[in-house]
Structures are given as structure tokens and as C-alpha cells.
Length: 105
Image (tube, rainbow, N blue to C red; front, side, top):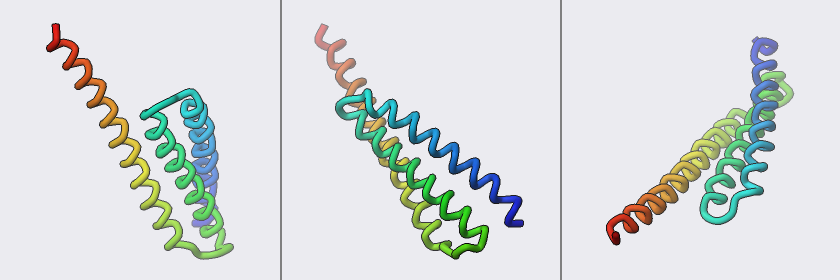
């Protein structure tokens, strides 16, 4: 069973690293309010990568860290929610600003 899951954990970890590089590339070019949303997203992806790294060694029975894996899952989900809420707030502000301009005419 260990050798069945290990490749998936390695692939997940590698994909998370790729996602971090891509998201950092976007974050580097952003300014203002949306940059905060992308920072939450980058941190969430980094937490996911850490979880996969820990899970890989746990499944190889190097050490047991189930509680740490569960904590990283929780932090990942919370950061994704913060990122989405931040983006939603920005979109509402832009929409409100656009609607306000239309009413003035």
C-alpha cells in the first residue's frame, strides 16, 4: 500500500511547487488589493506542498505525523477561503464603482 500512494504524493508535491512558482509570478506583477488575495493563495499552496512532503515520509513510515497533516489541511482550506473572500470583495468594489458611474450619467 505504501508504494501505491508514494508516487501520487510525489506528483502532488511537484505540482504544488509548480503552482507556487506560477502564483508567485502573478503576485510579483500585481499591486494593491488583489496582491493580498494572491499572497493568501501562494501561502495556501505552500502549506499544501508541506502536507504532501510530510505525508510522503509518513507513508514510508519514517515518522508518524497524522495530526500535522490534519493541521496543514485545515490551514490550506482557511487560506483558500481568505483568498476567495478577498477576491470577491474586490470584485464587489469594482462592480459598485462601475454601477455608481452609470447612475451619475
